[in-house]
Image 1 (spheres, one colour):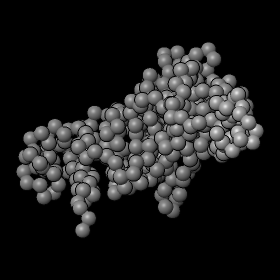
Image 2 (cartoon, helix red, strand yellow):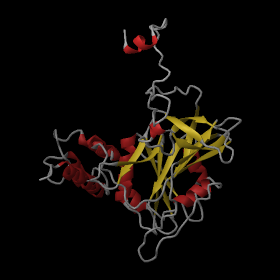
Image 3 (cartoon, one colour):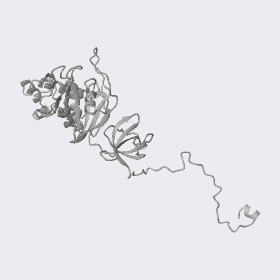
Image 4 (cartoon, helix red, strand yellow):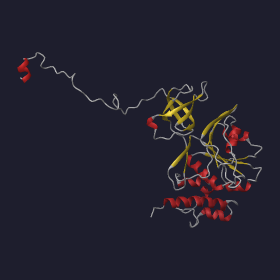
Length: 354
């Protein structure tokens, strides 16, 4: 018997323990216990990312439906380490009305069919995602003002083939210069080519090529890419600029990647306009895919010795022999030089640091 029982006498409820007076320290981070179980969001609605601006995403939902609309959304906290880009298909919850001041939430990124990327330079393996789910790339280059750069087009082609995207080429401002010499660099490559004058664009032909596809437009600043986008999509109203007469460089006018839908009585497609760039790093590219940008070279390379590097000092290189003999056309040596420049860059990147 305890000392209390000796004083007060036995209590008939001695076996009962009263816990009402026990003090517990509250959880400073909230009263609900943390859990790793996330909601399934089975009621989420799917949409397409059409623009990204400082952590806010413009998403088109009910695409091609009676209630098609564009809403503003933020990214769920569990997606904070995942990049969301134009062209992504995402699942959303929350307020999907699209009314002013409303904000939905992106809770899932659907599996991507393609992913077009670039790096800051050839030695940087950190990739920058440009666009997702595009199946075509339209490379825009000017015949003059600024001068066309075959090496930059080579890089676009390599990035397209690495991503599994079909490339096309449009040469603008052909009234200022004859593009034939430039186009000779790509003889043998199975890519559609469109030529465009300042006062006359082949809009019907290009529109037909875009129908039923998601096409990303890329090109050097000042080549007329935004002008072409505005002609194809009048509602886009993309800013256009001019070329500096001293430097010969175009001024950056498009500062963000934006998707636009084009449609007519025969079908619809998507145009994804990207900011103009003066360089296109390939540090993230699988080097095995480089030859895919030079289709005829890839066929000749099958007869090269095993392990051939295709560089200037490579013994018995079949590509070098074919270029020297004229088998690859007049532009063969120049195109081989372009290939070797890229291969040489990647060879240096693969060397261990001393």
